[in-house]
Image 1 (cartoon, protein in one colour):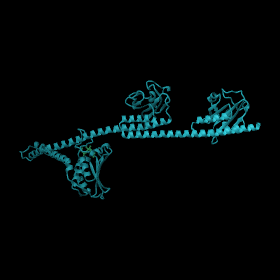
Image 2: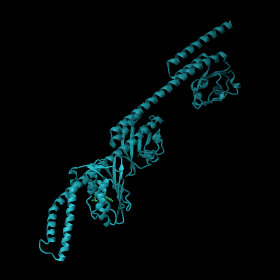
Image 3: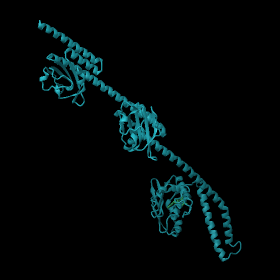
Image 4: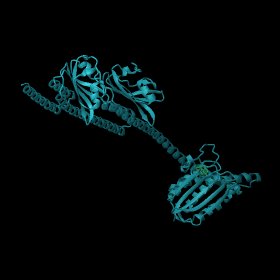
Length: 597
Ligand code: ADP
């Protein structure tokens, strides 16, 4: 009878065990609420195994600490209060061995430890199973019966089956959590990318600094979904950080200034390191002067450009609001980097625009001066012509005795007057010729540079020796003929030679070279004179440009010679350059090239 009844009982229990397993299986697929599923599992175990306690522990990521997350027991509070550790007590022992245990006499088992707040002297029986995922313990489930009510192997087997279900539930929940987190991270990354992209668009379309800064602050607020964001820039003139943009749920701090090192943002600026606080008011440096009352979590990052801190970007939330995550602070730093580059670009752009404006004004003034100079010379030359012709005419008449005989004392000054009037007339003619150069027609013909140079050298020989200089020529016979207007080309060579003579003190040496180069020939005039400062080499070809343009200038001239040379050479399809180290005695070299005929 007894056997039959116990058989009946066994069958009944087996049936409810199976029903419990099916139900747990259904629960696992129906919900992703881990705590709920684990509670149900514990409850089934507790009910079917008629136990007094049922505790379910999970192993923490440190691999050592185990916390009870479900405890069905009159001592649940005590059980859940303190963790147990792997290797300690029977629960810890099972976690370590990974093998289920049945201990029917706990008082006799040396591994047993007493959890504070639970009964110790009472006889107890326990079954305990690890929750194993891929051979690794992820938790432990333990059941106790008080008094002399022992467990049997079938109880342990059932518990092991339930533990397998629990493991599946935990794995599912963890996978789901990981997927959810990955999705949240992906969304955050997408938001960040979109904010950076938007900011890049702002930057490319907006070069005005104030509007750009406002865009940076707005993007920060949108991205982080906080209550307040401020941007401070360093002002070197006042040695302070000034809040230029403040968008806030509470009174904005636009215009507020901080000394470097002062307050949270001053410190971020001074150290170049971000500061992130879960609660501003529990920070040692918190001061009502620097932050409004409602502020809770704060993150402040430096705006760094090429290692230089330009300012600070700060975001904050209301007291008790969620703290800033690492990902959010990283996102802010990225925005800050982008902003720093944009700020620097805007500043460079402003400086460039201002410089361009100044240059354009200076250029216009220069053009105006050139025009006045040209006009003035033209007018003066014209006006001088008639009186000069008259002076010369009368002086010649006097000289020739047409107005009566001259005494010996009178003759000498009259000759000087005649000669100097001639010099003046030649100068006036030159000035007019130079101003007319553009209007003159060119008559190019095949020209031998060797012949042309030799003629110039012959003509200059007297002047050169009078000036105490020597002139050498080096004409390479393979230099090709060039196509040139000979009269104009002579003007070029004469001007270069005249300058070489003029700017070389006595004892100096002049050299003229002719040599073939790249489909044409070069003529080079070098001297050992005073030289030209390298930064002015390009300018000497401008009309009226003189290196020493002062009134007390020791050299004669009006600064038109090289302008004429340049125009003629380019008019022939050639080029000209000036070279000099700007050192007296090392001289200058002018080289021009003309295409072969
Ligand atoms: P200028 O009538 O003053 O000689 P140019 O146009 O011929 O005018 O030359 C312009 C300026 O270039 C000169 O005033 C002088 O300062 C400089 N320059 C030209 N040739 C030489 C040279 N060989 N050595 C030094 N300076 C020179």
